[in-house]
Image 1 (tube, rainbow, N blue to C red):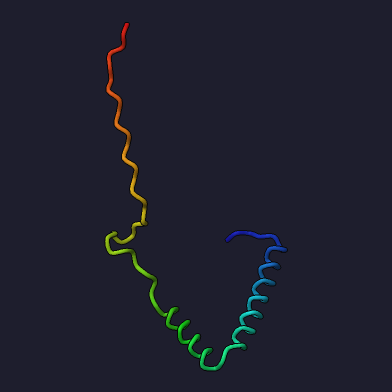
Image 2 (image 1 turned 90 degrees about the vertical axis):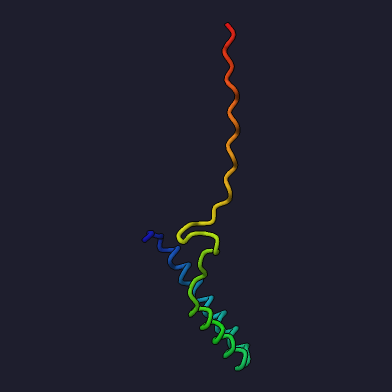
Amino acid sequence: MAKHKGFQADRRQEQAARMREIEAAWRGSLSKADAQAFETAVAAARSRPPAGPPPNQPPGTIPNPPRVPPKPKKEERPRRG
């Protein structure tokens, strides 16, 4: 785990507390039906497994862009001399 200075940890705690306040205020501004629909949507999203790789890739590979083909080698000519 990374070590951080005390002020960084304090700042993160303050930011987390502020985010909780903002979220609570936002949820308080929703109607009961909207709040319930939001909770249902969040629960459904969290219960889904992560998306798998695209079907044309074998499992465990990362999507890499295609490689640039190498330049053709120059023809070797005998040196004059």
